[in-house]
Image (cartoon, rainbow, N blue to C red; front, side, top):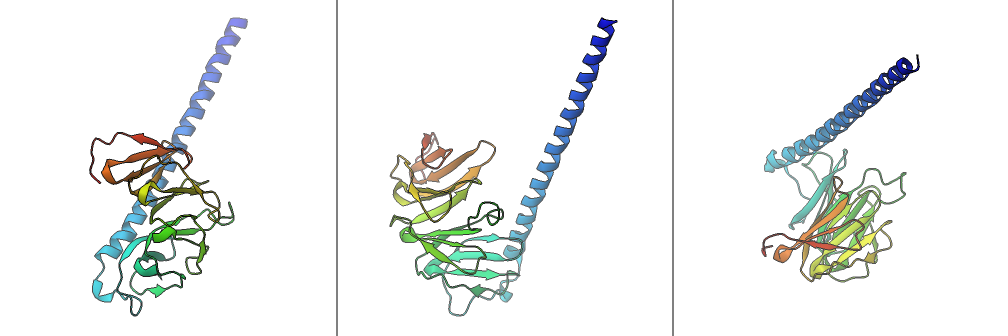
Length: 232
C-alpha cells in the first residue's frame, strides 16, 4: 500500500544518505592522512639538514652571510639570505649560488607547486629589504619586480589566489600575479614580522612587534586581534 511504499522510500533514502556520508568521511580522512604525511615528509627533510654533519656542508665560494629562509620543492632546496643570496642544493650538502641582481638582504621565500600551468604565476617568490621582490619559475633564474615601497619586507604567504607580503612599519602588499602589487591597509605602524595563510579559517594571519596580530581574508582589509601581550 501507499504507507508501505512511503516507508520503504524513506529507509532507502536514509540508507543512501548514510552511504554518501560515510564516503565523505572516508574521503576527508584520506585527505587529512595525505596532508599529515606531506607535513611529516617536510619535517624529515628539515631534520636531515639540521642533523647532517656540518663537516660536509659546502657553501658557495666566498659566501659568509646568513641564511634567513628556505624551502624544499621535492627536487632541491632553495635558501635565501643576506647580501642578495639565493643558493640551491639537491642534497643539502653542496650549494650553488644563483644570480639575483640584488645585494639587499632576502628574508623569506614562498614556493607554490601548483602555480605554473594552473594560474600562470611564478612558482617561487622572494621578499627582502628595501621593498625587494623577486620571482622565478625554476628557482635558478630570478627576476625583480617593482613593489612600490622601500620598506623592509619580512614574510610572504599565498592562499591559492593571492600573495600577501608584510614588512616594517605595518607595510602590507598583495598581488594575484606577482608582477603588480597593491598596498593593503593594515591599520598599524608596528613592524610586521611574519604571515601565514590558515586554510581552516580561510584567513591570512600576520604577527608583529608590540604584540600585534592581524587577520584578513583578502590581504587588503585587516582587523586587529587581541594578543594579550605587548611583546614582539
